[in-house]
Length: 154
Image (cartoon, rainbow, N blue to C red; front, top):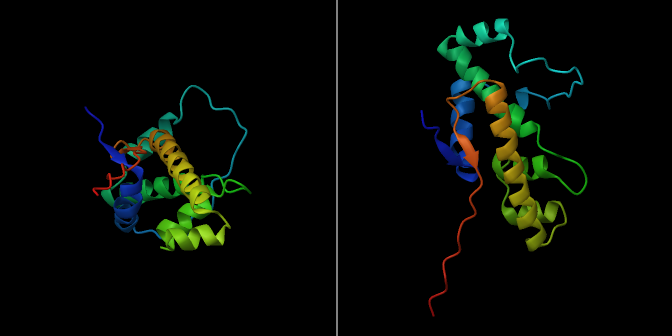
């Protein structure tokens, strides 16, 4: 089975809200994931977890998928110098303009473009990790594709 790939920017603009609505949850319902230092054994899910995931109703599965997406979003880095989660939240959740987000974090246009690009790359990587960890093959594999600028026709 060929896995579908989706550009992370398009996913956050369109599919993100669709999955949250299908799951019946709000973005603010979850806090950031907590790190645990308990070592994993042979796999990401044990037999009981696997059976529960397989036995979910369609509504429960939709909520599980939406929760997985939010976990990936909230798992992004948010420390001084790497405000990836904040930049993504301000632009995609709060719907601020690029200029407003750049001003908020005191970034030049170039610095902001670089920070946003890195934030999108990090989200795609974390999303793909949580997609696998939570066994959500219905979710697309996210990639970061830079848009090509059109040449100036003079």
